[in-house]
Image 1 (cartoon, rainbow, N blue to C red):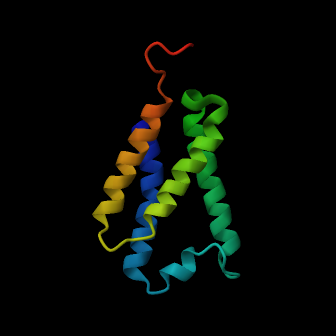
Image 2 (image 1 turned 30 degrees about the horizontal axis):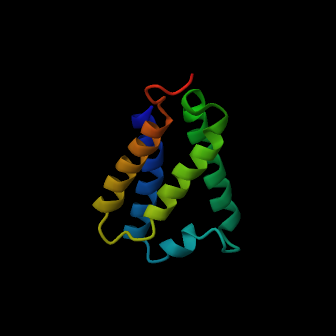
Amino acid sequence: MTQRLHDVLAAKLELTLRLHRESRHAAELLDTSTRLTGDLAEAYTRELTDVVAGALADAAGPRARAVADVLVALTRGLEADLTDPDLPRRRLRDGVALVVAGLAPHPGAPS
């Protein structure tokens, strides 16, 4: 599950990295508050969150949507500084691993 979640979120991150690298208008294209692309960006984020929640359904149960919101927000936050493209990639891998580890039942915890 960790790898699957990472891969889904990494695809979003890589899209942003590519836009940042190839277009001087990347910020405008990715900004959900703009009239031109805001609705599309919001729909994309909502659908991405649905995919992530689906991947988390078994492990997170009723918390799947909330955990998915956190992971998507983490990914979006990592897009704030793309000066070193490898840094958000590493942080995404670490963040997903931490969140998934937090979903695992802890020894001695009630079932």
